[in-house]
Length: 183
Image 1 (spheres, rainbow, N blue to C red):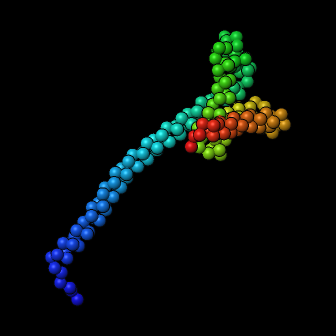
Image 2: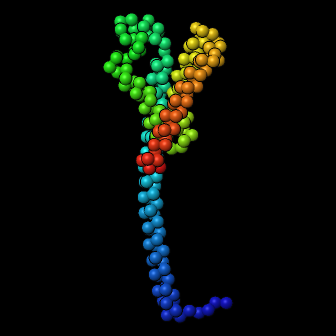
Image 3: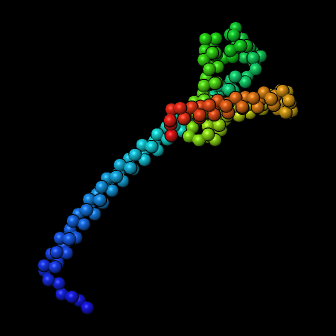
C-alpha cells in the first residue's frame, strides 16, 4: 500500500538526506584523492625497489668478477702479463690499485648484505659471487689437476672458508641495517 506524501514531508526528507549525501560525496572525493596519492606513492616505492634490486645485482656481478680474478693462480698472471713486474702479486691490477681491489673484496659483500631486506637474501647474495668464482676456478682446475681436486681435504677447507667469510660479511652488513634503522 502506498502512502501519500505531502510536499512538506518530502522537503523534510530531502533536507535531512542532503547533509548526509553531501558528507558521503565529500568522503568519496577524499578517498579518490587518497587513492591517487597512494597509487603515486606505490609507483615511487616500486621504482625505488627496482633501482635497489639493480644495484644489488650489479654489486654481485662486480664481486663475482673480482673473486674470479683473485682465484686465478699467480703463475698464469706471470705468463699472461710478462711485462708487468708485479703480475705475480697483484694480478692484472697495477700495484697502486691492488689494495683497493682487496678492500672491495671485503666491502662489497657487506654492502650487499646491508642493502638486502631479509637476512636469508643477504647471505645468499653475499655468497653468490664466491660460489660463482669458486665454481669457475674448480672447473678450470679439474682440467689440469683432475676430477678429485674439489674433494681433497685442504681444498675443501679453503673453499668453505671463503664461503664462510662472504657469509659473515653479508651478515655483518645486514646487521648494520639495525644501526641505521633501515626498513
